[in-house]
Image 1 (cartoon, helix red, strand yellow):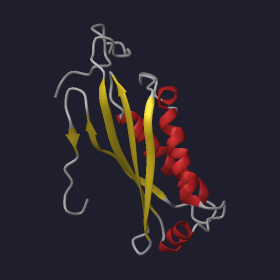
Image 2: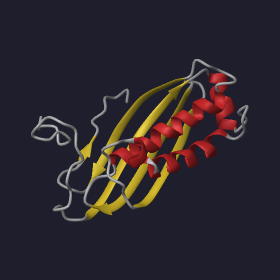
Image 3: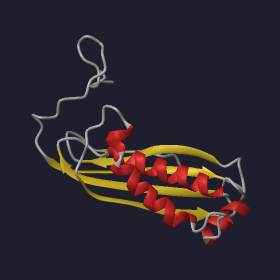
Length: 162
């Protein structure tokens, strides 16, 4: 494992200097999953949450979350995002809502944090919109699925159970 890039020689946290890096196309995808009862998942899928249509609002919140990443994460660079999207799927029987966010930019640093922020904020929004029906909803498995561009690419190796 390489050393932490956000630590200076004196051990203090710092923003990484990316000024000498070449600009390139960057893309990242992240996922967040929520566990809930099948009954609540059915409401989500039907768009009948107590606060209204859940997934559309969650997708918009995810886009907004990606755009606010540099405000939320102290050492993240503000990025000119060229694309952000959040896709949602519901497994009613399994009580699972899955949100997959994608972020893209052309820049000197990656968009992993933006994709993860989008997935996480979308998940928090689902929770907020269904908490009146079920308080025990769990946000779980927030993970970077893949990133391309820059020095190296990454893809999550998942087991058959995913």
